[in-house]
Length: 152
Ligand SMILES: [Zn+2]
Image (cartoon, rainbow, N blue to C red; front, side):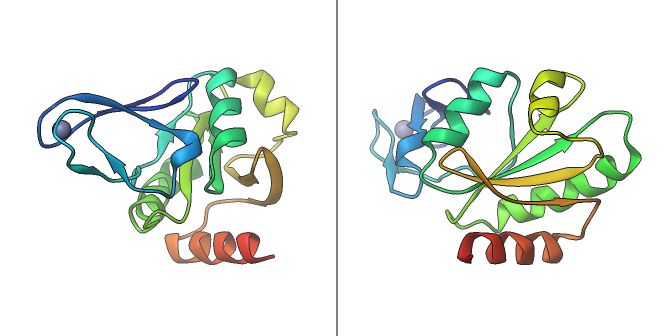
């Protein structure tokens, strides 16, 4: 289980169960469990961002680029593309972070980013938007878009 807060990601160590906080500033470096010292992998699953404060903390402090999927529960294409984002996160190998924002839950954030069609994915680096793309895409295309955005 994994839970983002305003400092980092709370994560139970798979070896000893100890709760650890992976600080956003340290993404991309090696984390070790505070109790048993085993290595903790950076998140390879999409992170659900439930508040604007957590969104801001993650996107401005993360040393890795963050791909944000703006979605809504009523949106069919969003449901179709969800497993694709999961694949992109699984293949991230510490190169990027995948996060999700439910626009029903955070309408003000969605409006601040002028999200007027979903799904929309936005790439942020140090809190600044560097690219966006609308519509549902397969994982390979999302990865390609992400790699091109980061290289730019
Ligand atoms: Zn441990």
